[in-house]
Image (cartoon, rainbow, N blue to C red):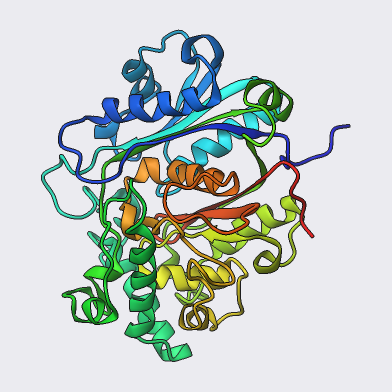
Length: 399
């Protein structure tokens, strides 16, 4: 009987990513074409001859619905194409489903991709954020994303003594990293003073505590390691070490045990991914991480939920420079969502692209020194769905 789990059974051989930002001269199909062909060219595969199935992520229907969101863009007909949506985890869930299809032996070579074209819509912030999951109570009707996360910061300030300067340090760190990445939406460093004096969006979160909306697409080509060696050769592919996912309630605010000081979906997804990869101490066994920094407070709480430190110690990591690019455990070396923005369907795939390029020593921005393995994390909805993926070189083993 084959051992349960995905560790080292799936290889990433091709990565593609457009520039993220305000892209007025291209539509969602143009972006998908660009990312897909970059990934296929890197993987040395022919889209029509070699790719057997596709998973495409879009959160909004205006970015594409059903399988033809990809099929029409790439003129790839007659093959299975599945559209995936799972809140902010949409893109990484595409990678997850594609990886399981490879691990199950159903296909030899598949493609996972995601795209979003948000900025063409006549709105500010998230279009149509008043989704059905926020319609169950007068308390949450029309609640914005910042107003969902802002109370977490208020509670952390009270319970642990964190403050707005701690949040500002997260923004400064990520803008420093993103300034060097050629595909980031925002490529300008900021100061603590700039972040602290920025207009408030939802107290205590200011403009620089919030990630922006962007357009963009990303894609990865997956196969089995033995095929990867034939196609791209040793040293040119990475393997998935673990994937964890968890879904909680769409109404966490009504739970008696809700504190706002932890996101249970992240905790549970990380536990699954770490167990599959054989990791007991991620901060010591991995080299870097990429967390879902939709808001600066989210990054700090993610540190704790992802077991990089104990509860209440998240701010200590940013204060002491541990998560800086030259720190003990760099977080978001690409600038994160803070600098790339968040085209929802594309984000998780883009993070997988960056993760893969880092462990292969091919990062376009800052390269984490001696990176052999790292994780990427998404958190979606009203703190309700999370995905964690761990990627490393084929020879990496947990220690």
